[in-house]
Each structure stands twice: as structure tokens, then as C-alpha cells.
Image (cartoon, rainbow over all chains, first blue to last red):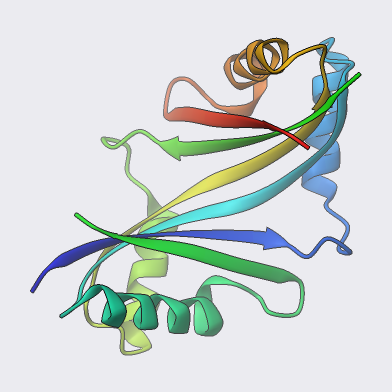
Length: 84
Length: 84
């Protein structure tokens, strides 16, 4: 079966506080990067999978995002699938 | 000053073991996604900053990656900067 690479981006919802991002922003400020206005930290999940077609792979990855990769209460996800 | 959004992708080097990714892969398998061959988990860091130009913003973000955002021993980073 053809092989695909899905790049899933998981972000906190814009209204959700991001302590990790705030810490990174403060650290950057301490290092002298005074032009930083804000930082948000999310996840980049790369899934290699086999599927009969790109459409099938896309459907699978969408389901993975809903069931496991993102927490729907506080996170949003989107993804791209490409043949490899 | 113009405002820019930098999207920094931080990945473990390909030779570095990724226990988090392996755990996600196993969990996906347990959920019935048997076509998953592998998972790698990285970070997606979105930095909002001001700069005089896109070139200046790019130089700043490159420096941030080297100094703080990625651990050069085990991680690689790349990024894109766009005006917002």
C-alpha cells in the first residue's frame, strides 16, 4: 500500500492560557529579544501511515486527531497529508 | 514597527529516540489505527514579534532558535516568517 506522511499541528485554543508559551516569551525577553510580543507553544505530530489512497489517509488522520492527538476541550488541530 | 508571525518547527533529530512518539504510535494501534508505521512528536512554536523588516525578523528568529527554542544536541529547527 502507498505510504503517506501526515503533519498534524495541535494548538491550544486562542482563549486558553499558555504558561509554557509565556515562559518562553519571558526567557526570550531575558536573552535580549525585546521585540517579542507573545509566544504560543503547540505540538507538531508527524504520523507515517499506509493507506489505499490520499483520501483514505486523510480520513484516518482526521479520526486520529479527534480520538487521540488533540484534546478537543482546549486544543485545535489541523493537518496535511502527503505521499512519501 | 511592522508585526511578524514566526512559525518555528522543532523536531528531534532522526537518529534520536522519541519515546513520546512511540507511545502515541502504540496508542493509535490500540485504538485500531493499524496502518500507522511511526510517529514523531515535535514542537510548534509561534512567536509574534515586531521588526523593521522581514529580513530582520528572520535573523532574530534564527538567533532565538539557536539560543533557546531548540536543543542543538538532539533537535533541529526550521521556521517561516510572515507579516501579520
